Length: 306
Image (tube, rainbow, N blue to C red; front, top):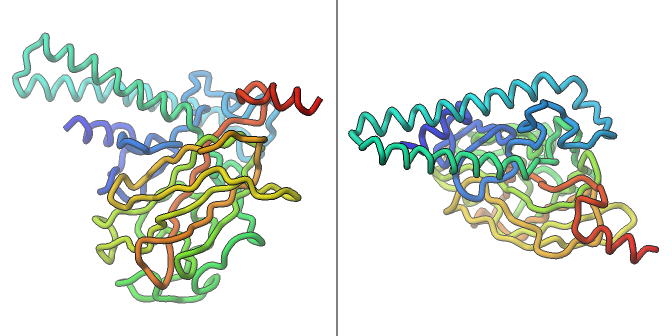
């Protein structure tokens, strides 16, 4: 019951494995391992976009965003109150003693705070709305070709193949994915700024909402690397997406970072059994801006360069 109230008040849509058309740029679910949703700027009570991108940032997509961020912060605050009130009413209706009710409410409030802190710490840099883009020269071809018709989404028959930019959108619904042929492929994402990457969140729909009733086209084993121009690839980690777990799964960087990156390569090495194609729904890149003070190794790196 509490999970349902949390999902309804924080997102306003269905969430978890039953959800479609989720918006990971808002608070999307309270399920474990779901990361990178609410931006740091969205939780800044001042409503300033500078809290996420830094005072010197001049991203055109963020111009005039202050009013929207203030509204988001107000919605988060209101949702917290609505959740606590809903829990209070449920406990009262079920005859829970007052002393016990207060204890449960305190625990609920602590849980909400923890969820908000997780989103606060994990902004998503792989959003087209804030300037992220696909490096098409270094990305696998879309299965079926741009604009062609193919059978990649049964049982609906012919459907237009989505471009790789689909993975940079906050929409998660059956068919809203980028398909590439076979079980091995890659995409290179150009971030809006240089960042220290810290984690990555991969999304795929669940079998419960899949039109075919299965998710064999979901990525399974994959690797993430930094691939800035004129430099060799820097492996950031190898991971496994498990279709039996949450639809959004967060994976943390597995090695110490030598520097910041603006280009991130997501390389799928296998899928869950589909021999024809693989579908990628959403890739989120989390991290901090390229300020020396933002990374524990930054000062050491600067000393080495001197």
